[in-house]
Image (cartoon, rainbow, N blue to C red):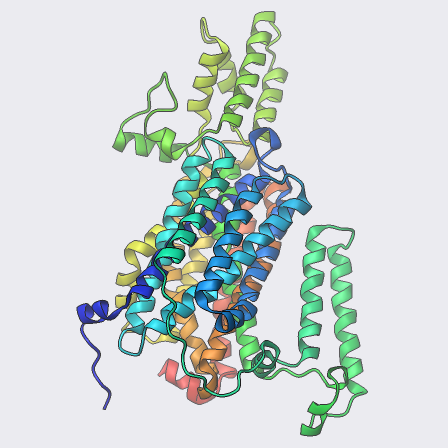
Length: 594
């Protein structure tokens, strides 16, 4: 007979001080990460005259794929270092790295320098991630761990919700303030860990500790397996960076590499116990648990589609969505803006215009007035001015420009103010925040309603709902970059629907690992669940850059792009249905589908 758990308040009081300190640090760390990552696409692709880097969307996609890929792989190593050198020491190292790394992001304008700074951010986050989770795990037990991790998950989303709001507000002053704010949150965390954090007691040793490579062999496969898969992943990264190694070259390399490994295996002795003592290069390719490896590969499809909310959606909203109806809705509720001062009123808070963007508009308005005075304000001039503004991600139609230039007694400053009011769009990072906001508000309710259904059913239905949500932007319509833009209401509705699916699928997917893992290795397998997230970041980033560039930017068909991302999520749901039916042992599958 199982023991009954303590009541809610009793569990809450049983959570010790290190638990709450760790949760506070998690909030501030998420403020830094999501404050930066949600606006990264806007910064990286913004033209230099508007304070951005001017990189292509393909480069942006690869940056957002490659760096987070390593972020989620490094905890396998950094977690082992934390067990050896202590949690508090690793926290101090992590925050010290973050302080420098986030600030450094704003100091580099070249791709190599920016890439190294971003990788430095990933190193700091990778040191922090396993230590904060390890703290929560160490200071909770069977009586309060469910509540403890539930609170922790909520804190993650609190930071994920507030971070983009802060970043969206300060980037209206200058992009430099985004990096300063992210660095500041790391400073706050460093102060907290130095003054408030207490090292939780380490558990008693359970026997000899395996090395990182030994655990990897137990869970996934031998060194030949890692080298074979690793070479393919490196080829994907290099192809995406466009260093003369094209996607055709990548596909050819992968086929030849796989064929060479298969042929080489035929020259080696068949795997027996004795062959494990042979040098690694004389061992056949071996996958220790092919079911788990297949699970990680399928699950990467979920994270590939999921990541588009943060890496593709902000750029899509900026380039293809007319968000002015949302501004008018806010003004109808909270009051209109001051027509003489666009820096006042609710619109100035949700549709920030940076000083660099204001300067670009001012130059264009000055040129229009000169043409008006000289009588040379032709349709060609208006079209060219609209094109120049559009290159700076400022959407104004030629007719709107003509009307403003014809304003009686208008000077450049007055026209600039009018143009800002006419052109401003709702900050994309605030719209994307619908996802995190919905989770903070509705996660408990959704979890309660889904408790009556089987975990497997909840996960699959959640993926289907999320696929519909992320694909809904395909129905937004509009004329893309060259016209008024798509409907913001379809985008907002899709984000909310996606959030519901995420609330159903994401928490449940981790429990699914327990059905695959051997009884004595469940914790070990849970640690390697992050490999799926790493792969999802890599695939998601590469696909984001390539599909956005080829379909949305070049063909002006963002609807096809969103159909692809929605299809990936739906295909993942179908793959899990087949996986559960044909791959899992019947005792594991039956326990999920009875």
